[in-house]
Length: 245
Image 1: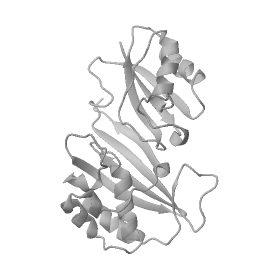
Image 2: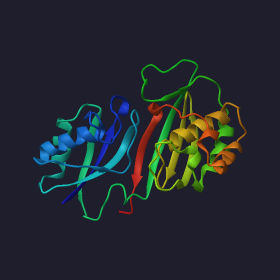
Image 3: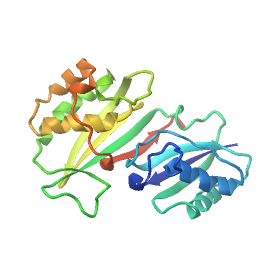
Image 4: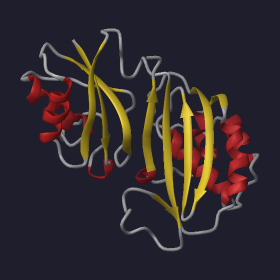
């Protein structure tokens, strides 16, 4: 049978989602915990492979197993064996055709920026930080150019393994909740470092280094060297995954 789970995690101390030889990834910890409940090795497939330091409020993954357990057994049992920074939130049996990654229709990411002269303390590792003033209205005007079906080559990392740089961004919204600025993006999928690179460019606009229309030039250039530096992973959260069912 196939089981889908939802999980949340603080990614600060982990080496990203995807399994590594070190064993210190979110996937590694979850697989060990779930395997103990199944009494057989479990292999997870996730909706999105978050990078080291990136967090999730609503990651979705699935695994196949012959073990029959109540849904709450997968939740409570796994959580008993997980570090406190990772929690399984729900588990449900799904159709064999369901795939956490390939069945997903959209992903939602939020970048949280602490916009204050002094660096964050209590939220260290959980938010990005910029100390100067920002033109929020200019950033909002610039974000409009990101929406639609685009070739996002200028925003993908050199390590990106995606076959195509084309993605469809449904929405790109910016809200100020002083001292925080929230960047929300919804797309069919994202390239490696894409969100963090888009936020970096929007910050360049907010700082007055470029006009809002500059984003359109960067997209048209399809060259990563034309864009701004990648912002810190600490502020990035996977906040949702949308499916047809």
